[in-house]
Length: 318
Image (cartoon, rainbow, N blue to C red):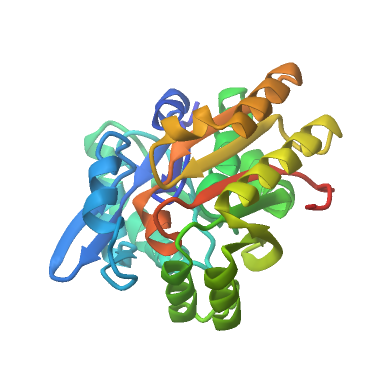
């Protein structure tokens, strides 16, 4: 039987223990801060120090995440993937948020063409097969899609069925919500990327009255859908909304994914999180919580909280 691997870039906010258990492999991002470079591999133990070095108290332009270029991605796959399996499905961060998807699709031909000798030396026949899919999501939304793809493979689905499920069902159902903490940081990042999830007027209003936007991402597009009286109010409303989604049977898959650009122990202590955890347990819904990848956190700021679920008909956010 041919072996298939699930690959995800470092922006995928899945708990590392779950990634290891499901056999999901990480493609790194580079982080550039001035003339220094570090590698983001979703090393959860290293993230607290990385937050302090590159995120907390830093200006918006201090550091940025840079995806591997085509040739660099080819080299990474040839060194780490092609000799150990026959095919791979690479599920990327939304193409509207990063050039990683474009670079990955550009690396397919070179990776396949250069794989033959390496595979032969490893006792495998034929060329490597690489499929690249844009999840249209980031962080915890990407994590849910990757989780479901890996689960399908583990349950015996073939690669074609997994790819079809992602492209025709899962990515269209991925909803991500973000509550930022540092408005100036996120406003300037959004401006640099040419998006209007936080405008100058929203930034000024938010700063004056402690208002935070509730940002929604779906199919690669982001928009501010509500206003909250501070990040705590926004998070409380988001978690209550998620409980409603669970109770109303709106989930496409029985899983919720969340990520926090800070100490996730703090999240577990929130009363609203504890309430969500009880509701999830009652309804047999898996609750995934991970520290936010440095790649994602650099775009939304320290203390940002993100949550995602998969739903074809989600309830309205109130």
